[in-house]
Length: 391
Ligand SMILES: Cc1cc2nc3c(=O)[nH]c(=O)nc-3n(C[C@H](O)[C@H](O)[C@H](O)COP(=O)(O)OP(=O)(O)OC[C@H]3O[C@@H](n4cnc5c(N)ncnc54)[C@H](O)[C@@H]3O)c2cc1C
Image (cartoon, rainbow, N blue to C red):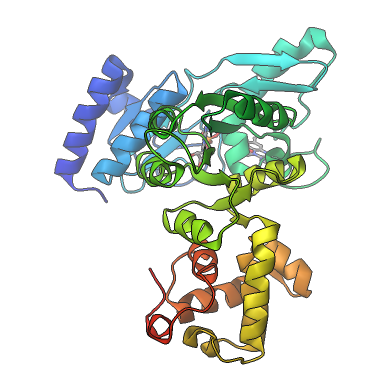
């Protein structure tokens, strides 16, 4: 539970961000204290009514700064008690973000704000011949349906909603306009991916990432004013939900290491095929890490040496079992637990357990750090090897 002073400070900042679209009125808080479930009502400290993505991003920044939790609120139809603010906090009511921004019959898709409801979308599509078919039995918002992975009797399986909705936003940063144009064309040819802003230097990239809070920021390493690595650090600090993909023409291992230490989740060479760029962006948005296969091959060969117990192998690796080494190689390739499970023909739960053991034994807190550590320059000195892994 947030400290009362933290809540007071957060509310003051929220009021200056949103003015009268912030409410502490008891009736409004009560209205947001429950969904359709039987759970006991639990009201938030304050309710906000943003109208833009930038405002949602601003609310989240304030929440993070003061350690006050946020609870998004769609139509409040959840049956599982999702919207209850059991420890108080900030409720973000999305009902005023209800615009249908674009619909395209050719692409069979529509771009909507999160507060648009299922029936609202179908009403707008009525004359186009298109229909949004997922119907969970309530007139809920598309944001809420995405969060709950709603399905229903018209869907072919559970959890279908997520596969149909992908508002994956990207900020692109490269000092060459032609390169940016190329990346934009590739990314926007994919349904659900939208480039929301382009930057010509690192400082602009940081500012645009702060403003748009994109799912992914694509940063070239070499940029004027602020290089991609320093920009990555600032993007992650100012927009914690954004995952950073570093693009470069250099495939030197130290760049990979530096990029991942800066907090990047992916590293791709600029001459990678277009489908790899799309895969990388989607993987990062889904929470995985991805390193260019060209570089990954080098990492794998280093681990292969380790598995054979050759001299020059970092001591830390000797703690791992043969199976954990296998899993480690796949983590270094950026594979998710499910993909690791498929590759090794084990269950996702077993894969997750191996990954947890590896993190524990090597003293890491995330799989991206494992990949970073794995990409250290070969031939580390004995003293270096004696060091604990970087945290
Ligand atoms: C009568 C009835 C029948 C139902 N039948 C089915 C069914 O057959 N199959 C099925 O799958 N579901 C079913 N549901 C559940 C339904 O899918 C959910 O109620 C719905 O998805 C929630 O949408 P909402 O807009 O009301 O979200 P809310 O109830 O307001 O929120 C639900 C969750 O999503 C989060 N959330 C809301 N908006 C956002 C956002 N923009 N960004 C991030 N998180 C957000 C909230 O914090 C909360 O955790 C049924 C519900 C009812 C009332």
